[in-house]
Picture 1 (tube, rainbow, N blue to C red):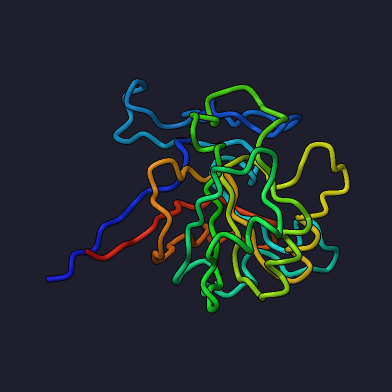
Picture 2 (cartoon, one colour; picture 1 turned 135 degrees about the horizontal axis):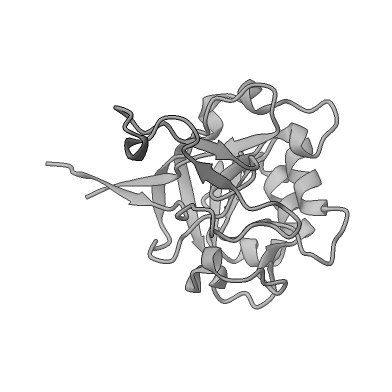
Length: 216
């Protein structure tokens, strides 16, 4: 009998979770109904950004006139993906590293497991020395028409690149991005990715609960 097993690759999200420099921390509140006030239910409110915790980037995030979140087909977020072991990379993920990583010829979704996942980075101060995706790796992915690329940090571009070249390269080709993944305990292999974002309209990105499904 084949048994499906699920691996949660989302980071835990709370008001204390690390955010991109300059972004406000989110707020959870119960200004209306709550048990403490004698109401029959708790009704919570959220105030914060769309690029917080494990989330996806749609083309409009960086591309003027690009498609917005709800305009992207679900097939980008759901389907076979390959997790690559790139933990040996000391500075960034390059095209050369991808050439050596054993990417399957028919791969359309790639998740990059780097040394970022070795720590609980989502609870630690912003680290400007995180492993990022070099623009050469982004171009390598778009040349192969990838649907999705994911990384285990808050952003994919180096803080030394103020023009966000990897975001621009990927999103202008509608290779979508998942950020803030936790791949620490995920062996490199093929999985089914389940990372559909919340169905928000007219926005540039949104939160998701990213899962991998494997069969044993």
